[in-house]
Amino acid sequence: MKNWKFIDIYLKSKNLIFKEKEVLAPYTTIKIGGPCMRMIFPKSVEELIDLLVFLEREEVPYFILGGGSNLLVGDKGFEGVIINLRKLEGIKIIKKEKNKLVIKALAGTSINKLVSFGFKEGFSGLEFLVGVPATLGGAIKMNAGAFNSSVSEVVKKVELYKNGEVKVVSSSSDLWGYRWFKEEGVILSAELELLKKEREKIWLRMKSFIEKRKKTQPFLERTFGSVFKNPPCCYAGWFIEACGLKGFQIGRAKISEKHANFIVNLGGARAEEVIKLIQKAQEEVYLRFQTFLEPEVKFLGCNL
Image (cartoon, rainbow, N blue to C red; front, side):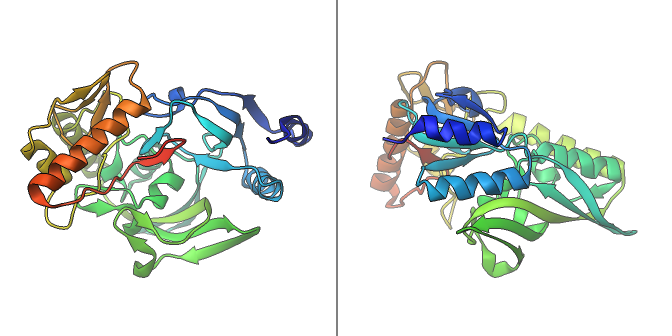
C-alpha cells in the first residue's frame, strides 16, 4: 500500500496540478474505465521529468496518458498514477525554408493542432491523421498510420526520458515497425519535417480523409480506434466481417456495423464486455482462417 499522503505532499510542494481518485472513462475515447489513485497534469518537460524521477524512486506505478485513444481501461481502474499530458503542449518552428518546415512539438500536443499548424503555414505531412483524437507522443509510440501513410515518415528526432536520463534519437528505419516505435522510454517532444504545399491542396487532402473516415468508420461514436493490427495478408476488419460478426453485441458493447475492426460503446459499456468481444473475434477468425488477430489497442488495469 503506497503512502499517498506522502505523494500528495510532494505534488503540492512542486505545485503540480493533480486529482485524487479520478475516473478515467471521460479521458478515453471509448468512455470506459474506473478510477486511478492520482491523475497528474505536468505543464512542462521539466515538471514531467522531475515527476518521473520521483515516481520511479518511490516505486509508484504510473501510466502516460495522451488523447485516450487506442486504450481500454479496466472497470476497476488503475492502482497507480496517471500522468496526463494534455497540458504539455506547444509547437515552435526550428527551421523554415522554401520547400521544407522543421517544427518541434511537445508530446502532449494534439495531432489535429499539428495538422492545423501545418495548414496555416502552408506545409504538408500529417493530413492523413486529421480527425484522429491522439497526441504526438501517443502517435509516435504506436507509429500511428492511415491511408498508406505513417507518422514515421515525418518524424526526424525524438526526445525521450528513460532510466533517469534524457536522450535524443534521430529517426531511422530500424527504429520503426508496424504500429510500433522500438525505442523505449517516455516521449517528451519530437521534431517533424513538413513539405511545402499549396493551402488549397492541403485543405482538399484534409477534407478527403475526413470524408473517408465518416464514410467507412464509426467516426462520431465512442470507440478506441482500430481493435486489431492488420495481418500481413489482409485487413483485420475483412476477417471479422467474413465471420459474420458485424453488429455482434455483448451487453452495451458492439462490433461496429460500419467497420468490423471497431468496437462501439453504446453507452454504459463495461471493459469486460469489450474484452469478450475481442476474444470472440479472435476465436472466430482463428477457427475459420487459422489467423491470429493481434490487438492494436493497449490495456490498462485489465487483461485480455
